[in-house]
Length: 261
Length: 261
DNA sequence: GAGTGCACCTTGTCTAGACGAGTAGATGGG
DNA sequence: CCCATCTACTCGTCTAGACAAGGTGCACTC
Image (cartoon, rainbow over all chains, first blue to last red; front, side, top):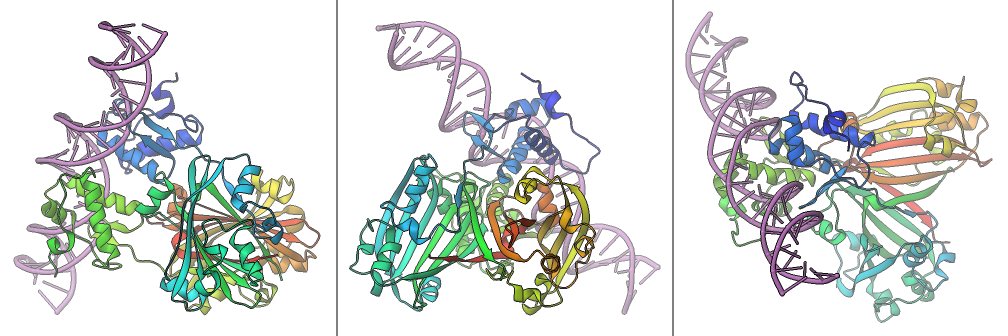
């Protein structure tokens, strides 16, 4: 076991930088240099109190900085650990290509199986409701919509929470309004209903999660969410679906192709 | 002036929820309901200590939660304020269309002027350097590259920091290696050099900023960054540029079009 | 009237403790 | 051998102070 002083050094009392920031800096650097590896336990609060000769609140303050940066996470009764980087899900720009819809299962399941993960979908809720101002605008002034909510999990970890909104005149009474939309998902059903899909528009934002999102996605502190709003257009130019998705940012890389013309 | 009790209510001593979380909940709800508006000052720590009958550290703990969520920001000597939502810059999926390159100025300047903002570009640095592993892979195993670094500001606020990497055999000795790449930017120069652009690939991640990024972009706490890596391909299928961009997430909405075929 | 400096507001940093609660390993009894 | 319990270690919450330092406005001085 390497001793603390050999890893962490001491404080500079002449520095303007606050003590708790200096401690955070040293821990951060040690992590960056690989002195503490992913998943590894950092020194306990008591050890750092001893090492630096400061009070416990000061050490905790340092930890809270690193937590805010998403570098570490604390586990009650166990310790503070370097946060491991979870495997990421890559969303390719051709993920809605028609050929991917020909199979039986949903895109999420197929792709995750291929990547060797154990996918799951839960929290399924399908109901009619009043459209929000934003959804109404995107769908072209509809008052009520069919909302399909579901949560996606990979290897037991929730990674994404999505809600699809569809105009009632399209979705009501169809298989889209059933819990299981059938092979190929709702996009396949929309095309069977005569709404040949033309293109999608996606809007992407990133921000810190609300408490509700933290709960639903079991997010560690210091993990932002990606907020993606996709609108599907049919060949008639009509917006036929709006899908509002909240993703755990540490689990995703989004990928797009842009034309140069 | 509305009195505190009428806005904030009291604590529930029977609740399992920690006191500082209850206080944060009440402040968050008051902000969400618009009882405290954007830019407005929250009650001071001393006032909340008085109102809730708790110690100051407990109140500060509550504030630090809201700060982590990006809801408020503290100003030393002044108070804690509801963080205003800055105007966002929308990046459209056609932003690299050739027609946008025909004008004299850079895309950033043109677009910002049109939006009525005061754009600025600084921190310009152009130099040759060793390619990182990642950049080398993306550009097809090049060892050294030309790196162009610059920071973009809107109305005095830094919003984006970008570095372009180009293979030396393309860029060396050309206007691309000059501080000012000329009208239409480096993409116009690449096409003049015979590298007709075919398409771009963009990879998007979101995460909390490093301390260096916080400094460069003057980020408030609770604001994530969007990390965008764009690769430009010419019609020969060669990767001719990699652009690595860090954006203040609260200043951007990215927009893309996806084909349905 | 202009400017300086003080008073008092604000948040920032830090201490030294207390008790609670979750975890894990050692200990000992059945 | 298995299981319950004890104990020591971990982080979580909270208190009651102290001093530092930035911001603002008022009062006093010149």
